[in-house]
Amino acid sequence: MEQMSNITLMKETITTVEKEIKSLAGKVMDTDSELGRQKAENNSLRLLYENTKKDLSDTRRHLAKKEYELQLTQEKIVCLHEKSDNSTRQSSAQPEEISIFNESLNHLAKAGELLQECLDEMSAFTASLGESLAMKVSSENCGLKKLVTLESE
Image (tube, helix red, strand yellow):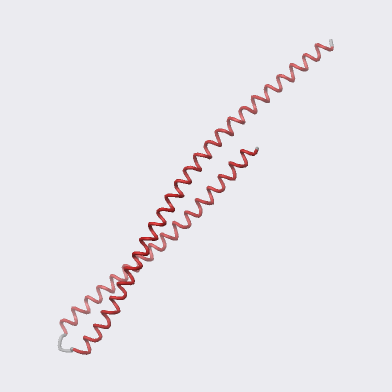
């Protein structure tokens, strides 16, 4: 009788252990699936990070070029102002030429304003890319922390 009781108890223990094994196997599969998803997301974020970094670098180069163009335009404007002042002083008998010269000067001033607006837009865009890049890196770090936590459990 005692052996029957032991056998019944052992059968119940085996059944309980088998259920626990099935449960743990399911958890392992879920963890593996989550790990795969996290790795894919990590790779995607890494690629996005690299692309954003490249775009930011390209934008900075473009911004530097526009800043240089703006500087050249501003120098031309200063030079033209000086020439205009000299011409005005030297020849009051040439009003038509002075008018054309002043129109050119005004045109260059407007071009300088447009370049300044472009420079301002590029600066805002660069700042936006920098913020986006920081958010992506932060998000990637958070994903890695979750992954490490899951693996340690």
